[in-house]
Image (cartoon, rainbow, N blue to C red; front, top):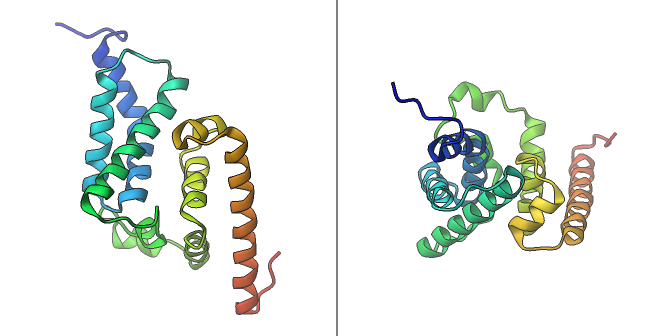
Length: 178
């Protein structure tokens, strides 16, 4: 039998797809709002990766997100469908969610996601990269082309704005924010 070694190019690509595919797909879906197009963008990203020399993971991960982001933005430009980077409807229900999964999402989660949608597109993107993809400030800076300090400022301002939106929302409902 001919088994590929762990160091083979194919094993490296398979491992990268296994580890980075799901978060890249989620990120791409938050940009293009369509699972099929998100999958295409992620597939293109991995094709480009496979054509490169093997790269250490700490360099590869931000590179994958940057390439995926650019591919998604290219798709949006081509389709003339520029939309906000994410809406709470797409986070609550996509074409892979079952009705039971959608029903399990609490009202408070829906409210917070709706309030996140009130942030600027830049703030939403940086928050998604930080809290959804779990990226470091440096990785976010690499993906977005901003400085690490600017990423920190954006995250700080995003959290302040979100906190303010939550307070405003709780005031409207008559429930104090704890």
